[in-house]
Image (cartoon, rainbow, N blue to C red; front, side):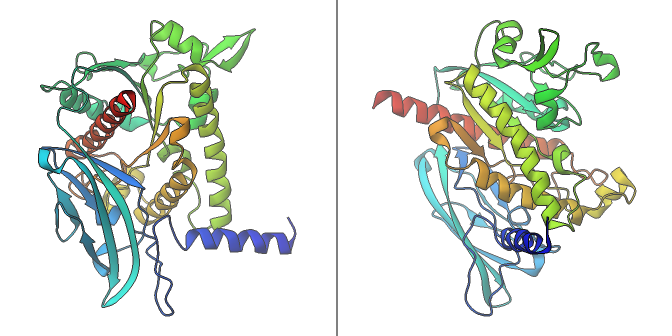
Length: 383
């Protein structure tokens, strides 16, 4: 790359890094450095609390340095979040807008739509769910809580597919979640001698074909799922893919995320070919613990909260650009980053792994998205 090309790439990278998918104000003298990032839509269920934690939608070392003004027909604004517990009378769509102020100056604004589903949406439906992820899925806490929510009265009849059933799994809970895993590892990793007791796993989606490892989702469905295709597949990945990237080198970071998305698209394409009717949900990478103490306890100075926060926020911006508005291909963005409390949802001694409350908040977001998709499927079937 010559000097002119590198300058062009740097300008493009800095332009990306200066603003996210939400609309930032561009008046002379204003600042969009907080890089407000919102998904097109978010999801809630009547009777269940849901929130937007402000630290999770902007990039700033101290969210208290800015002020958030939210407008929505439902919910209320608190110091660190907007929160709502919708009722059945709130079922439907609600425009949600936020304006960010530094002092008296508005510096960013954005909108999204809340889809509120009935608590009985999907009642008498049956669906098969496959969870694919890293250590957050491996822990099985959010999977157990999701199963609990789906087992309440007037919920759809569910089956979780997967070959991984850790000892902590509740009855019926299974998944494909492995600590430290990435999009690439699911696409490529083959271990001829896997040993779960030693935490040695081979990608469940990779099989030997003519003596060579090959991504083969059809074989996975046939041999590991009893021939039953999933109706929904949720991918919660991204932390391990990008954790060691350099947040101070925007060009390298963009190239790193490009490579990650190449593997993501390979896996999504393989699932689409093997299970063409399945709805594929790409979960936005969760935010970090808001406290540096969690990173110090986990990484002893090798990695810091502000470094990962910058990477994670850029990754979410890129995920929104890459995976939004692909509903025609049955690919959906799942806004798992909004509802996770970056303080109370984490232990004091871990940077990226939530505590039980945080995992429950992840489960609430997934549950709301699933009911919305079941409701939308029912609506399209009757039209």
